[in-house]
Each structure stands twice: as structure tokens, then as C-alpha cells.
Image (cartoon, helix red, strand yellow):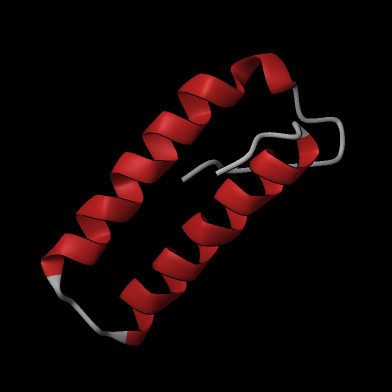
Length: 60
């Protein structure tokens, strides 16, 4: 998970960041842990991925 995403995000890092975030998301989902903490982490990762895709005009 990225610590801080802001409106001045550098899209030149999007490829690496998206790859890492998607791997982390797949790993969390693969564990099958449905605790509130895990769900919160999954939601945060999904939001970060969406933010980068929208900010950098990247289609899923």
C-alpha cells in the first residue's frame, strides 16, 4: 500500500505502483481473511488503484 497519494501524484511511477498494488490486493484476497482489518486494507488498495488509474487516465 502506498502511504500517501495526493493530487500531485507522479504518473511516471504509475506502472510500477499499479503492479505492486494489484499484487498486494491479489495476495490479500487470496488469504480468504474476512476480518474488518483485511476488508479495510482491501478497500484502501482498491481506492489507491482507482485513484492512480483515474489520475493518470489508465484504463483497467
